[in-house]
Image 1 (cartoon, rainbow, N blue to C red):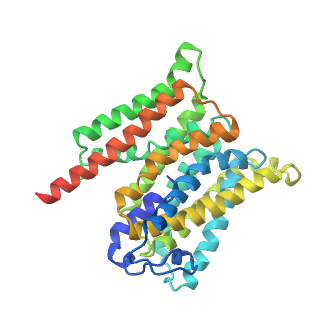
Image 2 (cartoon, rainbow, N blue to C red; image 1 turned 90 degrees about the vertical axis):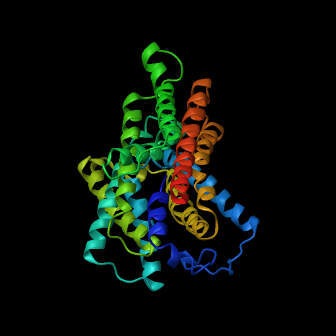
Image 3 (spheres, helix red, strand yellow; image 1 turned 120 degrees about the vertical axis):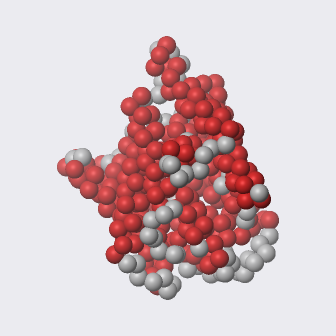
Length: 341
């Protein structure tokens, strides 16, 4: 899910402000043209970038941690990406964040990037990147479920409840049969449980970010969260003993390329395209990334890394992706229906 939830929160809070400046990639201080009425080609090009770049991050993580310690790799990625993005946004005129905004950003960053992304990079040592993407793709289901448990939260519609049930049955199909009957494509059980907890942490962080005291600039807030999460991952790397096992001589060019890809295409290019799309395209269309990214991850893992693509994985993928689509679409339809009344 990466930075989508926190950007969507900022869009909801400052929708009017975000709609004032329609410059392609201007959010990253790059030049662009006026896009008050962007062409379908521009929109689909940006959307395709989000599909491919965010869908490919799971495979890039797997490659990066081949010779890089997982927590240290993730910490380096977010500290570099967040630090440069923070400097860009401050140089572009974003106001200096307050202490309370830094506190909120660190809390959200720890939930999203230490609990969420940290769980992913650790689990991908044993779990295929495509399977990891499917398990993390359940974040929207967790968000709906957690919100429904809040006394003041929104209750899920009947179709959303069905979607949640189908999604968790899909998880059982993905990791259950091989553990129970002892054959089929085995999924590391501990790794899968860590990924489920990572998705839960990301969902909690996403919901918390909606009400947290964060900067009005979505990209400045994102940069602060990357810095806070990166610092947390660095501490986790230290206390887990990665520093003592780290050897520069053992790092491969392939792993370094994976980390650079994550910084440039995962954190910067994908993020820029996504932020621009939120300004100029319908939100339901932009959020189709949640259904497409896991499919992209599974296919790339199979084609480029020879990860298995069995009937079991295909069935589970169909159930998980379909459940996310059903849940999110039905929740939006229910919200529109209530507003019309």
